[in-house]
Image 1 (cartoon, rainbow, N blue to C red):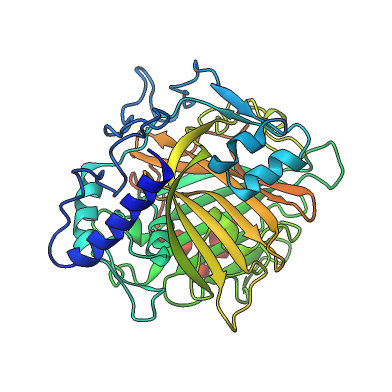
Image 2 (cartoon, rainbow, N blue to C red):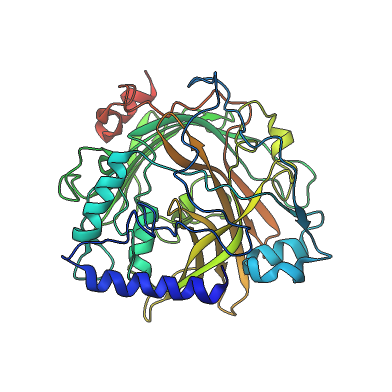
Length: 452
């Protein structure tokens, strides 16, 4: 499918949705998938048709065991590197091109595409309801009505709606993971000291029985992170409550003082804790938080080479040094595929401030997750490039993104976050099976929890 047809269909979806309010959405489940993606593949055969996703786990696998790669026997079709990048630049983001051209040894191996992602039937049914009833608030950037455990806007009319699809991306009812962040020192051939963490995540909007925004108390996301290493921060903890229509709440526990403190405003371009000023808060999970500082333009769809089906990269059986390199993830563990993405261009509003005045988000049509993001400086030059990719968590079932990289071109440094290598297997069913409790996210109980 060529770019003109993609943009035309994108425009058709927008027009359809504008006229469909209150009159049903016949496109869902017909020429569109239950979450609003195009069912058909492209004319070149690079992108296959969606047939429901690869929802079944490989034979013999059980939750808690190392996750196998169902496509592990496949070989790359070709590689994109500094010598041939201009040939493929129409299917790459500005940041991807810049990484290939400026980082020695950086390449992208392109594999056969698999539209592997799917969700439960109840998720599709709730998405159908949202297509008729979900809406933004009068201010144009907050969410007024939508059911959780569903896509709020499967046929978005604007960039804000597309970003809400990403922010409310469903990951089951809640999960418990052990992960590591790496920030290699500038100019070093070492990956740096691991910042190890144990984390619990949930959201009232992830419940399959959620009745909407009001039922969730206006809470978007709940997050408890406890640092387990190095020794200088071990025992410190962060408790965050991401809200839909007001400032985020953040509490910090310092083990050396055995004290919980309320943090100042922690959103927009405030530096993320313990990241050496190489990440801002609203880069977490590619984008999060309020949308009031940018104008978000839905610029249609295009085909892009994006990280996808990253089973190998996210395997707990890896050694950290085999996954993380000083300036990029191990190229032999990365997998790129051709997929259609929605393009959302964010431009800072007049009178607003943010470190990055322009950003471009590339949102996967099958999962509504941002897989690639470019962040620009005031001169229009790409400053940071972000990448992550999904893999199917069959026991939920849902597609999850985990390991991600942010590369800062000005600092010539990378941050590698949510790395599972060498850690216990994630517990993706922790909330569903009662191993996550709501009182874990109570600031009054934070100190008690961290010293249990």
